[in-house]
Image: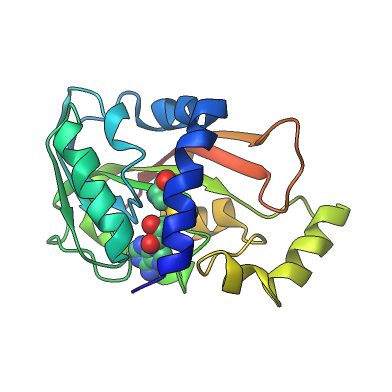
Length: 209
Ligand SMILES: C[S@@+](CC[C@H](N)C(=O)[O-])C[C@H]1O[C@@H](n2cnc3c(N)ncnc32)[C@H](O)[C@@H]1O
């Protein structure tokens, strides 16, 4: 899945966003994670520095070759053991019920079908395993921003922003996919600068059943 222009832009912008607060979100996303982890759509590896020592291995799946190459460099410097592989959210390279944690960070906005991606995350998680999520999401219904998001998603946004969609109700999609959300923080980021991708959620859900 080649997205050369988006990939170059993201690898440039991501470290700046991290310096302005996203790094702290990544730290919170991964705090307390233990065991075997799959990270879906790892990008250039922005999360890798934040995995705690209790994580035994991270299998980082990334479809875009430019970002994957950057992720490999980040993996070499990461405190945890991180292996970067090619792949997509709809076909994770792991057996059923084999991992402790699946991490999705700013990726459920871009997958073609959230339902399929979340079913696949659930398949690889052992019962009681955790989905850690950090995603930008749809604005609350009735807000003018929600209308703007819908209009952008139907026109230019996915084309210019690597297949991203701004108006996805990701928390509902997570619950509907067989997870119980145990922690959810909703906030605007960046806090001082409204954008169609400002509303965020960060939290933890447990595989039910
Ligand atoms: C905005 S970037 C986020 C990267 C990284 N997760 C982060 O937190 O910085 C979106 C990522 O999703 C990846 N992606 C897009 N479609 C995907 C799919 N179907 N399966 C897995 N990853 C996908 C892109 O290649 C890109 O790395």
